[in-house]
Amino acid sequence: PGGLHRPMTPDLTLETQINLGLRLALGLVLGAVIGFERELHRQPAGFRTHSLVSLGAALFTIVSAFGFPGSSDPTRIAAQIVSGIGFIGAGTILQFRGHIRGLTTAASLWSVAAVGTAAGAGLVILAVMATILILVVLWLLDRVESIARRHLDLPPDSYELPDQPNDGKSEDMP
Image 1: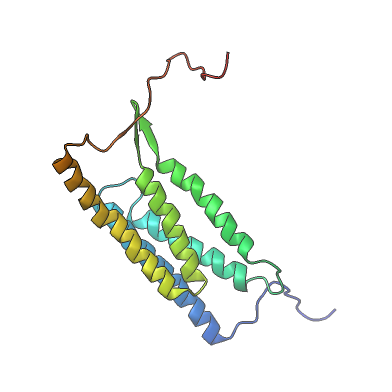
Image 2: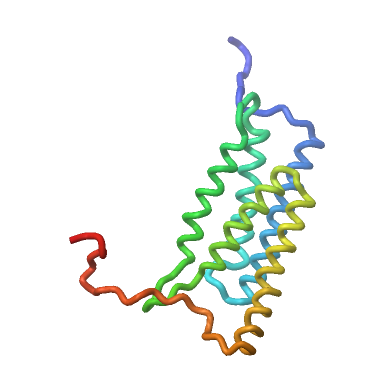
């Protein structure tokens, strides 16, 4: 009666809003750093994709924690980020002539969503440390793997699927 009723509008101070904006920026920057590494390796999901995934995860986390005053469980949104990013990651996995590519990119997208979630939750040190560790895995361990393959005379990095009948039927279907 008579007044403007906005039950979903949180009452946040300017300081809190600036802090939340910085969390968003942190999520974007950390995702961009990881995406840049993927871009340098010409992977299907690179700079922009990783940036957007991390930024989106940070935003969902912030909205779930601050956007719905009185909400009982902000962790539900984080759980949905985890399952939702699986669909994007699955889109980067390609199978061509028995070879599978894109698993590392899918894993990096999943990891960058976690970085964005941590940034959105205000866990700055954790988000930065996770970014560093992801870069170690993507860059340093890639070098270690290449050296090991050369020195141990291992076959090239590829995942081969077993020969499958071309009749379009699954093995368990008549």
